[in-house]
Image 1: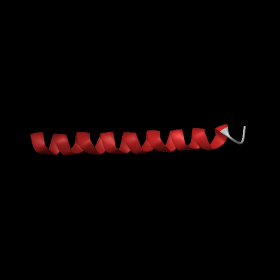
Image 2 (image 1 turned 60 degrees about the vertical axis):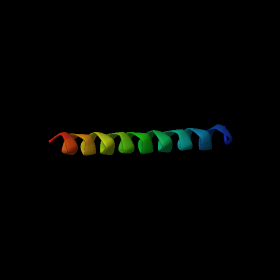
Image 3 (image 1 turned 30 degrees about the horizontal axis):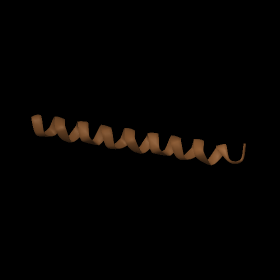
Length: 34
């Protein structure tokens, strides 16, 4: 349990970072198109 907990936390953090970068790339693309 103690070994899988940090992995789950790192996975959730990585997911959040990917989502933020994806959203920012979409926003910059929309601004460039507009």
